[in-house]
Length: 170
Image (cartoon, rainbow, N blue to C red; front, side, top):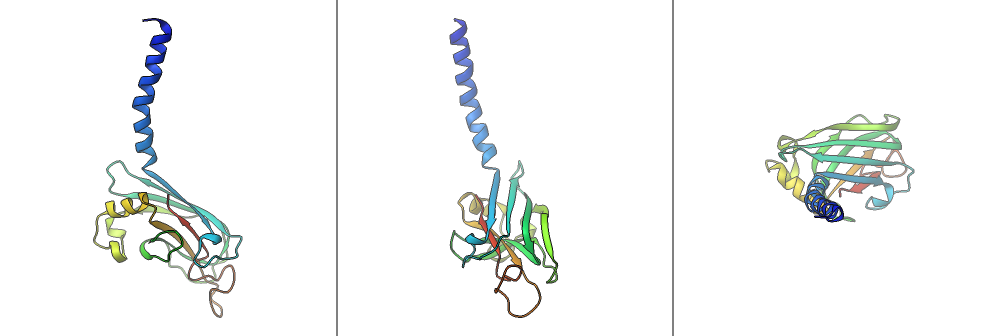
């Protein structure tokens, strides 16, 4: 074999072996970009965030990290089962609940691990694989709720108790 043929063979082999591995790795990592425009209804806020999820090798737990910026009075962050533009049902808690009026938050809001024991609502008592399947299908989202503890809610940034920023998990 000539050197060019050997090199071509090596490149093709790497592509054939490496592509499935990178696709498998990619299917174990999910993210959600959190903004007010993704809320239902959309929110006028400067708050934003990112959620990052990694499935462990045996698919028995989901590691997560939620970071936020320009947000005040966060009282909770959750995963909901629901399609884009749809109000879904709570299936896992990522942060909270905490008391209203906590002030400005920037940086890591929460990190941890979700197991079957942490699933609630329609996934309570169900295997973690059902959450993972819903994440793969794009039928889950992260919602971050805020509350200033004063007067009616859902009126202004820092006081959207039904959600200030949201993002579909992909």
